[in-house]
Picture 1 (tube, rainbow, N blue to C red):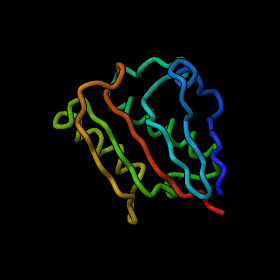
Picture 2 (tube, rainbow, N blue to C red):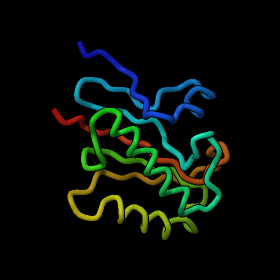
Picture 3 (tube, rainbow, N blue to C red):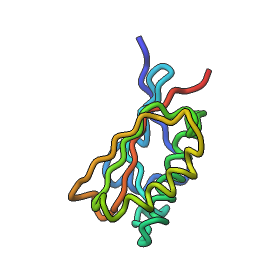
Length: 130
């Protein structure tokens, strides 16, 4: 039976402690990453939207690295957007920088009405390399 182990990136605990959740959970060779937002170290949102998206991916990279993976190990990607139609061009610019070539992960993008003061969130499942 696989043991479930919490994973936290260094210096990124303000939101996790405030809301009582793990940054990610490792189960076997899979990593289930909680929604990552464009938060600063104190948990506050980055006000510029494109910078918020870039910071969300930076925060995601830090969580992946804490488990020994990178963006190339992402299998499934889900993004949440408060105004998808207006935000999509910026998201696509950032996404193209993060995933510049195939193979790309699966991707589901959802429009939502609330993200606790943020405008973008990203959640992933990744395979941990052996």
